[in-house]
Length: 144
Image (cartoon, rainbow, N blue to C red; front, side, top):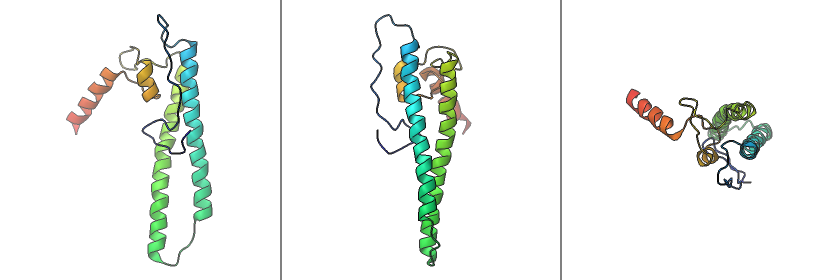
């Protein structure tokens, strides 16, 4: 596992799921595959939260130089914004794990079709199929 995190992509390595011919979509093996991905991602994010708390507590200093103080505040603000994005991502991961438990994971919340194993591996918290996501993005562009 890598130590870098990003709210945009999964920060860990996993073995892609090998689909078998005629296999049912979101069968128990696929659900466990995605549960593992989501759980590992959640654990990585939680470790980053802990690391941030320790870093901010240990590295907080009252610098006499205003430039040093400003630099530290800027660094802490950036780190807190990153953690805030990750907090929102943790919520989405929890929602995705709950969808696995209710057998609703992997299906588009807009049209109900299968999102697809590869798309879910690229974006485990995906809620829309690629077609609905594309339409959503087009609407967003038109509104702005």
